[in-house]
Length: 493
Image 1 (cartoon, rainbow, N blue to C red):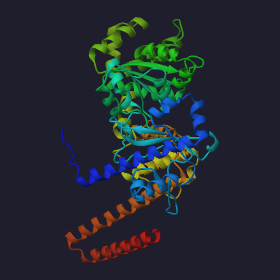
Image 2: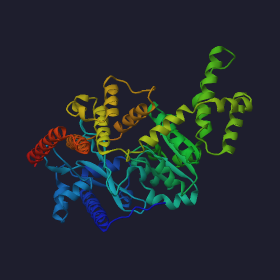
Image 3: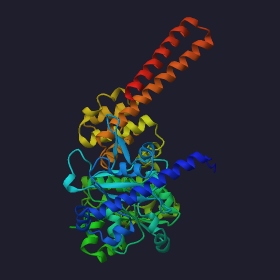
Image 4: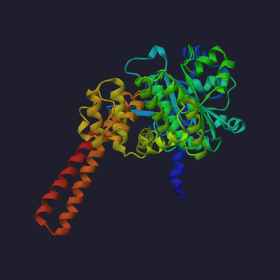
C-alpha cells in the first residue's frame, strides 16, 4: 500500500477545518438552548435531552450570516469557512451561512471529531424551494462515502455483539440508540457504499439492513444487499412497512422500545427476503402463468446469487431454493451458470463509476451531478438552460433523457447507472439557489480551462511542425483568450 505524503501545509489546513467545525458545533448547541421552537421540535420527535447532549445536536438560526459572523469574530478567515462547507456564495459573490433555520446533527468521524453537519429544516420554515435535509459538502476532512453517522459511539457495541444494524438516517439512529439498541449506525446524506461496508467489516461480519417497503426503498435495499454480499457479510433484512404502523425504526421506537429490539432480533435471512419478494406472489397450480412466474422469480434469485462470495453459502442457497420450489439442485446450478448476472453487473457499474458521492469524478462532473439532481428534485430543468452546453457529454445525454421523462437507459449500462445515481441523489437533499450559482460558476470555469488547454496543445503542435502561419494565428487566439479571461475575472471581482 502506498501512503500519500501529507505536507505540513495540508496538516495545518486540515487543523483549521477541524477547529472551525468544533467552533460551529458549539455555536449550534448554544443556539439550540436559546430556541424554544427547536427544542420543542426535538421533544415532539422523541429525542431526549440526554441524547441531544450526547450527540451534540444543535440549531442553526434563520439569519443569513449568524454563524459566519461568529466564526469571523473568533478569528477564522472567510475563505476557510467557505472551504469548510459552512458558507456558500450568492450570485452577487456574498458569503452566507449554508445552514439556516435548521436542526443540526453533527457528523463525527470514527475518532469522534466533528467533520460535517446535517440540517433538518424546521417545519415552519419549510417551502417548495427548501429541501427538508441539507448536508455538508465533501471537504478535505469529510468524505461522505467513508463516514457513518454514530459509528464513533457504536463501535465497541458492534464488536461486542458481532453484528451491526444499518438504519437510514439520524432520527432512526438516535431513537434506536435511546431504545437501548447500541450496535447501530446510519449512512446519512449518501447511499450506502462499499467503502462504508469495508469499514464495518473490520468490526463485524454480520449486518442487518433496514429499508422501506415502497419501490424506492426496495430498490435501494437490494443494492445495499448486493454490496454487503460482495463484501462477504452475512446479511439479514428488516423491511419497514411490511406491517401496519411499522413505518421506520424511529416510529417503532416511539411506540415501544422493546418492539424495536424484537424487530431487529427477528430480522430475516436475506434468502428468505428474496424468496418472499420474487416467489411470494407466484400462483399455485400447473398453469402456464404459474410456470412463467416461477421461472422468472427463480432466475431473479439466481442472478442475486452472483454477489455471494462463499461457494459454501452459494450451495446452501441452491439447496434452500430447491427445497422451496421442488426444482432439482443440479438444474438450478445449471441455470445459475447460464445466467448473466445483469443485476449484479449493473450494480458494479454504478459503484465503480459513481461510488457514493462520486469522489473520482472531475470538478465539472461533480457540479453537473448536483445541478441535475437539483433540477430533478425541483422538477424544473429550465434552471440548467444557461449551462447545458458546458455539461460533460454523458451528463448532456442524462439531461436529455430526464427532461423527456425517461428514468432508465437499459441499452447503455453506464448511462443507466448515472440516471439511477441522479435519482437517488435528488432524493437526499435540496441544493439551494446560492449553491446552484456556485456550481454553475464551476462549469464555466472548467470549460474555460479546457478551452485554454486545447488552444495551448494546438500551439505546441503547430510549433513542432514549424507552421509559422498557423502558429501566429493560434498565438493571437491564445492572447485574445487570456485577455478576455482577465477581463472576465476582473468584472467578477
